[in-house]
Amino acid sequence: MLRPCTACLRHVRVSETTCPFCAAELPAPAVSLTATSARLGRAAAFVAGAALVASAVTATSGCGDRPKPKDPNTQKPYGAPPADGLLV
Image (cartoon, rainbow, N blue to C red; front, side):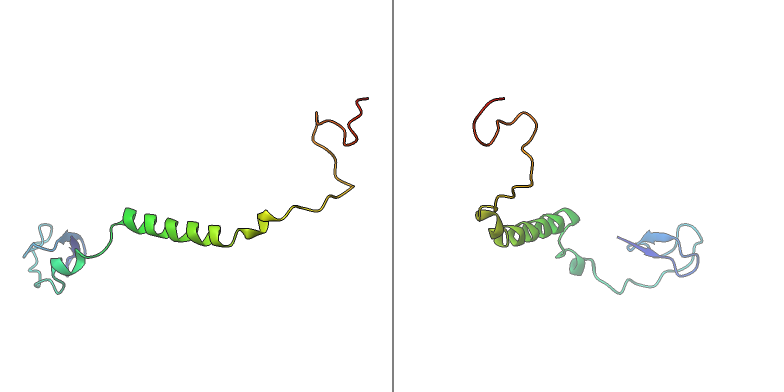
């Protein structure tokens, strides 16, 4: 883990007692290293978020179960047989 130096504001390791860039004395770290080890990694947080979104989408996708009403103004895709079955 890194933290900014109090004198030059460059990032130094938390375990350092003096800044390797400006030789300033660094105070003892306020946060212990064991407190941050319980956090999820970036990849685990992404997977958890993706799973949450996927479950929300599948729970609300019941609209596709109903057949759509036929609109007489729509055209068939190119190459589809005519609606009445007669070939021209």
